[in-house]
Image (cartoon, rainbow, N blue to C red; front, side):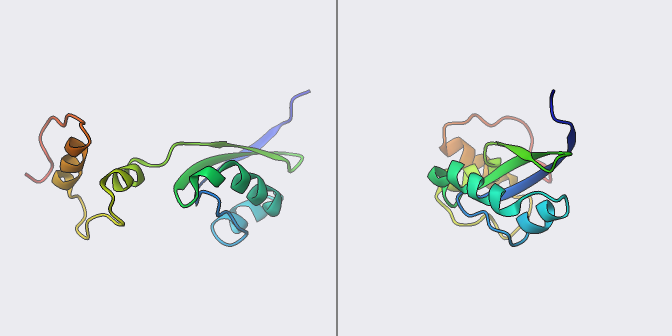
Length: 116
């Protein structure tokens, strides 16, 4: 018989660095999920992606067990990594900068930019 799903939790955690502090601890603890069990398993599965932001979808069940699925890092994180910069622009909505970064990666950028 299949386990009954109680809910989903979506988090973004640095690979290999999950620990009981926020956001992991409060999100899992409030649902009665074994925090250290999740942290150990997440860190083991993401040790090759240490330091990268990894989105994770945690499915928890009525018996307080859980499973989780790792997603690909957000586009902004991948663009920063490809551009070899530590942070984005101090000014929000710098579409031209993002488009330039994408072009330098060989990505074709088409269309009008907002605020042009």
